[in-house]
Length: 239
Image 1 (cartoon, helix red, strand yellow):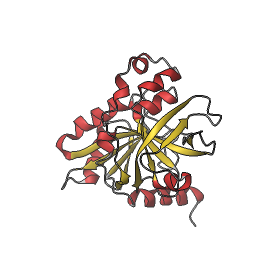
Image 2 (image 1 turned 135 degrees about the vertical axis):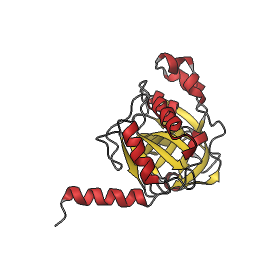
Image 3 (image 1 turned 90 degrees about the vertical axis):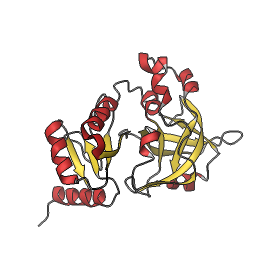
Image 4 (image 1 turned 180 degrees about the horizontal axis):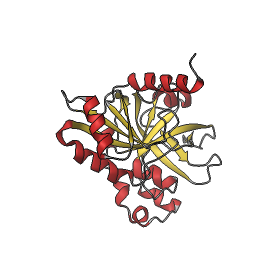
């Protein structure tokens, strides 16, 4: 007889195996479905992993997936108050756009790909003030489920907030709509540059929930997984 724990683990492994990503790297004690633990100083760790992999890694990208949802509403004209909760994903666009199992079906995947707000003085100093939202890239990419449910498309505006009461808000332009195998299609979600999402949640410890790796052609995933587990103190998820 299969226990509940064994069933959950089997379901998780099946989900991971259905994606195009070669390795999911998550902190020990975390879970691919629930993301209960984050790496701290995660962008530094991502760079260390990329250096360790060298030419074996085609793409190494961090993703911050907060444990609580954020809230979006349309921003057409008088500001439609219809709002929805959605799962945020903080990304560095230049890298995630190259990950297998991810595609933009409308518009584009950001026009500024290097997460420029990370160099903003307010972010570097850890000073939170919604007035600095004005220094964001003004871009957001949403998944098709959120696009369909809100009735918005590339080129439209939406309002994003970390609170359901919309106390602090930023108005952003939807530059693209995407589908991603590793996120699933039934959940409302969006991508925001990593530092911007961290800033909205006042997370100045640079949290990263997982690191996604696409390996170069011909590189053995099992051998790479074993090597990384020996080199770093975290656990990897293998597809």
